[in-house]
Each structure stands twice: as C-alpha cells, then as structure tokens.
Length: 123
Image 1 (cartoon, rainbow, N blue to C red):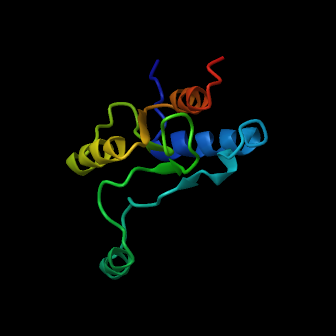
Image 2 (image 1 turned 45 degrees about the horizontal axis):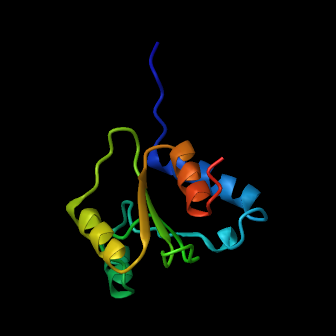
C-alpha cells in the first residue's frame, strides 16, 4: 500500500482552516496571515512583486501576537522530506535573534501543536 504525503499547500490550508475554527479560543489567532512568497510566476509579475518587497527566505505564515518572551510566531510549512533553503535558514536565525518564535512543520498536526504550545495550551 502506498502512503499519500500531503503537499505543503494541503498542510498549510488544513492548518489555516483549524485556526479559523479555533480563533475564538485563542485570543489573537485571527491575526495570523500567510505570506505568499513562493510559487511560479511569470517574469513580469515576479519583477513587480520584487519591487513591492517580496524576497527569498521569508517564512510561510506569521502570527504577530506576543506570547511570553516572543514578539510573535513564524511557521514554515514543508511537505514530507522538504528541506529549508539557505535563505530560509538565515531568516530563521534572524527572526530568533530579534525575539520571534519560529517553527518548521511537516504536518498540519505539528503546526497545531506549535500553536497550542505557543499559547501555553499543550493539551
């Protein structure tokens, strides 16, 4: 039997749906947003977005809600076997340096666990 591994899009979409369903239980969760940095684009659109500030390495999802010692949370979604680019590795180091929590999640469940832990709701 072949196992089916969800794509990054499927993982992130299911996570965002969970966030929508749980936003009344975790104050500020409604402020989370995606950063559509990746994907194939034609040259003209890519140039336009670069002029608007799109840059390599920015993580997929941001929650600009402070918790404890952190200013907020960034999550990078990866499919099974997905690896961080060099730019993403540097971005994570910088974010941590400036007081942001970061996580790399390979499943929806892992991302949900990160949110629950971030809010101090480990159960």
